[in-house]
Image (cartoon, rainbow, N blue to C red; front, side, top):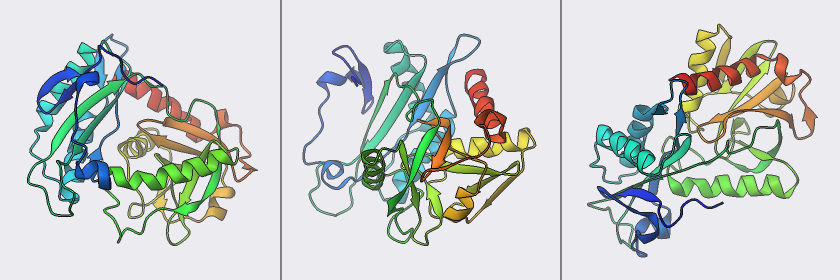
Length: 290
């Protein structure tokens, strides 16, 4: 996939520059140790013809929280970053787009704290990350990290080695995506998306603590309240998931995408007849009407 061309514009350290001409220090602590934070954000062409960033405020506030939680200096203003992002979209003639702001560290080959950090914002066209067909999911041999080992609520780049390994393992075995359990063998989340499953018309989702509780997850919870769909947040095991009627992943990149099966256990109810499918459609409606 080509993410940029010779004319693509990004926002980098307060300036709008060509992506192809942008430079980064090869001695950056971020490059060597994965010490950076990022966000995944989407913009949509709404039904009134405008381009709007979905939950921009929430995403940039989380970027700040992520940076501060791993002691990465953060001096950026949320409203200014939102304004800059709209300009990036405009200059690249993008409506439906995926947006990636990254805060990264300067040259630092030690583990000493930094006194400054840098930021760039990119955007490109991207279809739903996991496609639009029901997923065949595999329980991964990899676990989500112990919350005492990392700041699990931070969207930090280094955490995603775990995600990449799990996703690659699943795909190498013929599945579409992985499901990671936590250190206690409870269901956690996907490599880049949160889990919901459905049983007898009730939706269930793992509680925060061992997962990155995403902004799309929060949106799904809001939709459950609006649609009067019962929801329980708690601790669940793989057997409970396999006994479910349906399941789905949700995330900014993936949006809302249903599952066909988990470890070859096929969910019994037709996806179109589930509460989960109602959530999927409500989410699609929401992002183009926001």
